[in-house]
Image 1 (cartoon, rainbow, N blue to C red):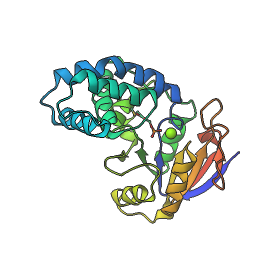
Image 2: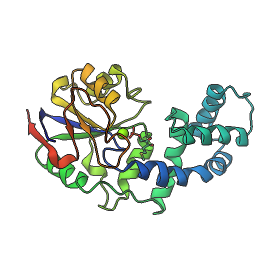
Image 3: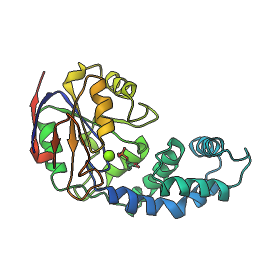
Image 4: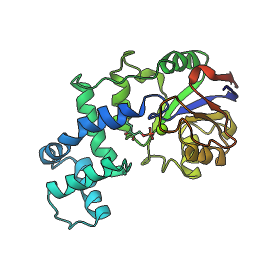
Length: 240
Ligand SMILES: CSCCC(=O)C(=O)COP(=O)(O)O
Ligand SMILES: [Mg+2]
């Protein structure tokens, strides 16, 4: 499997593309799970926490004054179902930010990821991230990795709040605008989820599917999208 594309920007998904899914579903979710309740209780005046809790209550049909235990039960249910709801992602992001700052969390990437990201950046490509994880959580996750602090690699971060849902064309149009308005065909999106690639292509982007061995989407139907097993198989011609 291989893919050749011409691009100015490379936008990457995280889970299943940069990191094993287990890094998110086991390491990060397990870190957040027991800390959600204490974090909510300890930060009642943080507007991010207050808004997120209010959104959880509204979205789950809880009473407006439902207590922390009820809110946390909803959040745990969403995590069990891997429902990437914005208020959950906002709260997880705060907790992960703290965990990375304490050195209790370290991100580990697939072996082909960091060398290729560095090479693409060195060759003049712009790198950006589009993930369901909140921007705060994303940035924190690049700050403490087994390859060091990778934050300088990325020019921009997008999530479902500042861009929109990952399976909708408009989100990719918003990201292109946020990148300064490159021609859409000069942006390539790398993701393991075919529906996300469909949305990127609908916005005029190039897209390459990641069918990584052992990952949930390894045997998915990627339709007409070029598919690779890792970043070493992607050849990018840099366009001006
Ligand atoms: C520290 S970023 C965590 C990523 C995350 O929470 C997540 O749900 C990953 O989803 P993605 O859209 O990157 O597949
Ligand atoms: Mg993914």
